[in-house]
Image (tube, rainbow, N blue to C red; front, side, top):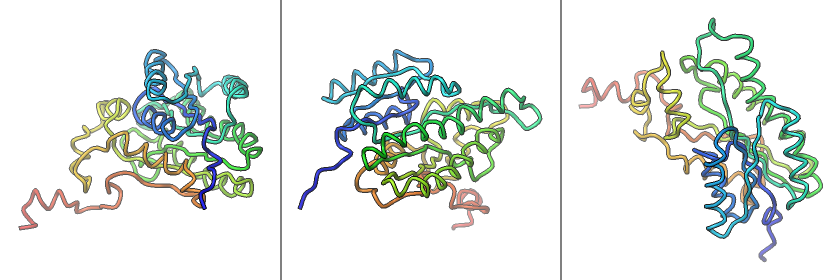
Length: 270
């Protein structure tokens, strides 16, 4: 017998929802029937465009400015959610860091990276959990990176932060599970986004083309492909999945030297 999905009509909060993967997540969750609150840091115009697209498609959304480093700002964001539908979905997508080698990272770089990426995820989850507990269900999803378990040049600060987030996912899943709240992560490879282009054009970092040669699927990921994985984990279909890190990377992290592309270049597959 069909049953009513308790997630339908609820609020979905998406950080960093104005561009890239976050934009696609916001669009998908709105299409699934959520009232979407998407946050942005700098580009109010881009955030407004996402809201306009959702509304034009018959959905419901609004944008909110948020500095993830600011704990008071996070409190203010949740105070503003009280007037809308109950919060049932939290997607921690936004991230920022300094792409520097170890000895060039200042204390300020480290503190800002940790506050923006890891501390904010914990604070967001802390504030989301009571609303989800009252509802009797909830979905918390963090967007992480293959730099959490692989070494990328000049990626140590954010890579360590992402690894910490994945550890928090497991701890939160165990603690919040009895309340019907699932906590998972989507660990992404290399996607065709502004953020990826910024990293792969950084000094001391090889271009994305060098990585694509190692990807078994031989291409960059599309933002919508990562968003589809997030949307699945936010759905009723994923009700029995928690504490899981879903890797979406075209197979990048399952290969090892000698890479298939190396053998092809040498003609060893002939």
